[in-house]
Length: 354
Image 1 (cartoon, rainbow, N blue to C red):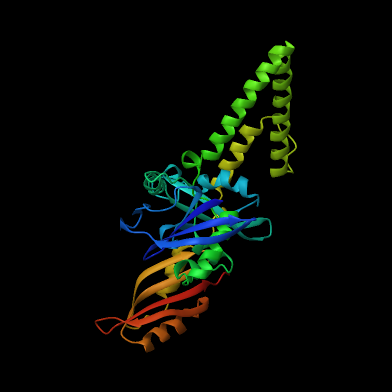
Image 2: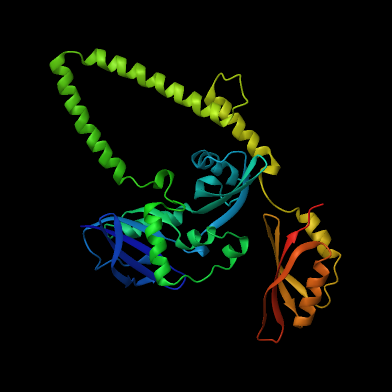
């Protein structure tokens, strides 16, 4: 009987689900809380020794997000260009992160993509901790992200809803079958399956060499096979390039021309969604803030989030009315009284495009 381990890292605790697969379906055989001195350095002692595959889920607070626009929708091709898109947007550049993407929707000839990324050093430490207990996770994903993208909004990333245990188990089964994102990429890619395939290929190669020796046709076979494979790869590269750029007729060197296109994409400011900071500040300077002050202003994908402090809820409502002159869908997302008696507020709005 195959057993699978799913490590669910939450905001306040870590839970391990042990699944058993029976006739193609997954059933929970054990649920236990995991102890640890630190949030991502935890103990896996006492778990079953016959775990076939393991998976890890991270909370939304451990992930970083960007919404960008891409002129194509193929997920594998987006993975290729995504690090270049994020290179100038993250501290340390693309070499310091591991990223994946989720296609959100499309408009005209562009596709909205949610880029999900996390610090590479953090992932490496997490994997080292698991491997010290002979556990090597196949995927690093997020149950909360899977739940969020089912009804996606920027607010759902900032204020995720609580998911009960029954729902988390159901989401874990879905993630084991098909992960929403996989943050094991590049040098951190899961390799056990690859190594098993290589061993199988090595055995096959030995048998092939023996057969070829008997038939005294090894050299001829290798020449024919190599030539056929090289020709097939050239055709495949040409086919993929033509699918990516169907209007381009003069194709000389696919690799060089693809690099040129990637460079063009990086230079296009319109490939990123956002609001002009200068226009935003100009609009905010025109409103009467009464006696309130803004402590934090953030924008993403045409949305504005304003956080600050006001003497009373009445003044927060007055600011909301002022903002409606320049923004759409203005709403008070949060309001609470601080220890000093001031009103702490958060207002969301949609940029009004001319």
